[in-house]
Image (cartoon, rainbow, N blue to C red):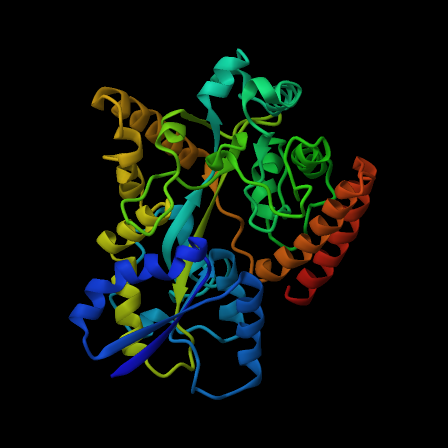
Length: 429
């Protein structure tokens, strides 16, 4: 019996291990000589442990298969940690993978040959809203949520009428750390006409006016109290899918799951959901796509077996099964388009024609989002720069909680962050 250590991120929180075991069942049946130990890591602990491997040449106790965010691939390649999968399988290809995701599978910008990671599942952001709340407040969601200014007006109206709306907050915070990330802010920056980095990726542009404008629009949701951070009890507040908020920007599909161990979202709540594009700041609509990849470490022992497991998980059927189980999307346009058919939460307690109408609405919105979505740039040290940016945002969030945040503070923090980012970029130029 050979044991493979599989390190994953908390893809479905406390249900991560049961969800994975469900999709691994057929693999284990076909490979009775293999046992899989699943270890759930936070992004922070995984980052630290990967870097600790640089200090040791040992091969024992290394993970055999690892899930990483797409933006980590280039830096881990540069550090020599990742196995080039094309050395194991000369026929490996990215042809079926959705084109925007391919650049994060190789060295920065595809500058060198080799495939070091494969996309497993992805998130594609849209704006969800509760139709019943919008109706009570006489909001035309598709029209009034077209722009960021309109979104703020709707949030203000909901905040003034929470009892009538039947919610506690206007818009939920989807960030798992109850903070703000580059992924959260990127669509606003792009919509304001800005970019996060220069075209040649040698300088950050955080301090540019378009960046400041886009980020300021998003942070105003927090500063105005429309988007909650920590509740009065110190506990993380609930979100739209728990019935506590009327709006939420999110990259997954809400679904009632067929597995008995899942806590289903209310079917009636799901049936009341509408979806539209993320509002535009000034120029045009933009969205962001982020993917989770699977990689092998160069120094791990069981490459052949681990690669078999990797190929099994990213295969069309299993990729779609797992993405569906956690409300995410497979990394192909064909898989994305088919993700909405036969959804039990949409069909439950309603005529099929009504369910199909909502299916069509969701499919149209997500496919439109796919047309305007792009990933964060394939930058060798983006993983490190994201952590620097996270620290900046945490400083601003603390200021918001203390109620002394203003745009001048944002501008000052972004100038310092840009200087630090530029210094690190210069070291790798």
